[in-house]
Image (cartoon, rainbow, N blue to C red; front, side, top):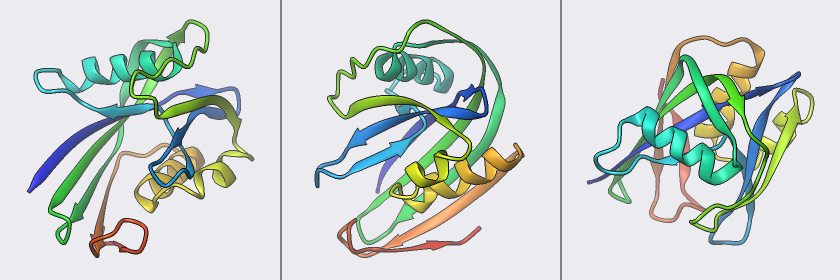
Length: 160
């Protein structure tokens, strides 16, 4: 089974948060908090700092703590995704889109009113915890199972 550890940065901005527009293989655009796969040998927070800088040009100067975790099991595809989402406690710099992976196409300071609409196209393991966090930060764990062999047609079930 392949396993990935992903860090997600929850960066508040006025009445909303910073979101990145990710171009997927099927050419759809998904909005998510900045973050990504933590490289072998990196700590989660070091990797998350790197990902935020690469995707947004911003530098996180401190962390308020882990806001929630997510586990996604895809037994039919043979993978498990584990996400830790951390709330930034300070950010400096100017927005620059220079994602070396070529996935992030846009960075947006999304209002609380606009965020749910942008996040709606993202998978439930993204939009459910981010949406609940926006309503009131709580330390929670989320778990999902993805059944099927194609991401576009697989059934997603929340199990926690």
